[in-house]
Length: 232
Figure 1 (cartoon, rainbow, N blue to C red):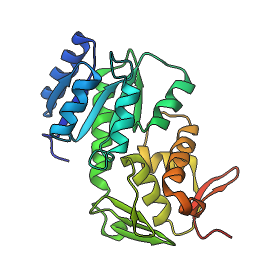
Figure 2 (figure 1 turned 135 degrees about the horizontal axis):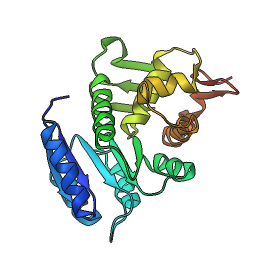
Figure 3 (figure 1 turned 60 degrees about the vertical axis):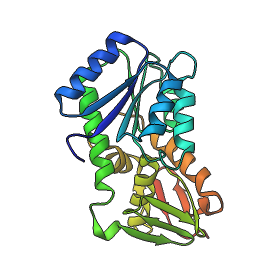
Figure 4 (figure 1 turned 90 degrees about the vertical axis):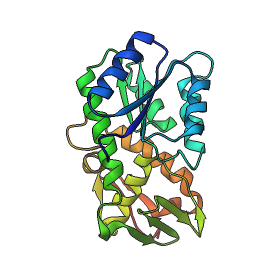
């Protein structure tokens, strides 16, 4: 991903938004700032960013509704979204991930940590198309094309988030081998990312829902992890 990646910051606290924008520009990103959800949707429709930093508690249109709309839009579904929130409970984190967030940071947070997580999310998105052996994959009715960032089930396109796409790609690449939750966290979210193993369960649930009739190909190996293989 280019050092001039475009980041949309959606944060209603003016001081925090200015701080984020300043640090992003210092790191070499271009940055757009919105202070409410409606304005964010206008910016997203003008030009999809490379990543979104999204406050969950926004006036008018909430961050939850913004990310829901992002994930329903095929042009935006794969854009990495980092959610910011003052809610620090594990249940709140899992709700954020279930809504489609690729990462979740609680306030107050370290700017350095946020920048590191943002850079990691952008690298993961870029890495999706960097390995020729995983560019095109087929398992049963599921087809994955990393160059096009496209997944189809029985030739019907399935819009996935960047995290869901990486998760499916990892499972399909392993050709029936079982991946533990910790291994999936490393592959999908990166090393040294501190999240609960249940975060992977949330993403798996969302992935299965979107795969519809092909959901049965993503199988749970109780007490171990997940695999992608033909259902018995």
